Image (cartoon, rainbow, N blue to C red):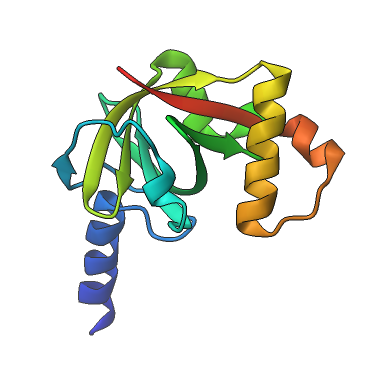
Length: 145
């Protein structure tokens, strides 16, 4: 008897915000101007990224900032649903706390930049350095629109 309201409430919540590994929809928050330096988010472990503006799809994801640049990565390369969305429309919305930034995702292919970002991920998240996994990951820089 109590299960139906709990199931309905859970489905409503899941449609709005990503919960753990479960994707959500449109992100709520206040739009902010993109900062000149992302150092302030160094301590933030998880952010939310919204893709597919016509039918919002949002995820929780690890991210790193390096000076004026902000990065997200897909460990599954092009196999992630959100990466498929970027192939159709590179516009994203990034939420950190309650602040939303409207950005454009650009896949990084410069080896020097990739190396710096990988080192930053390893340091921030205390990861093992695994060259095979690093080769499979696709890294995106989130640029101002």
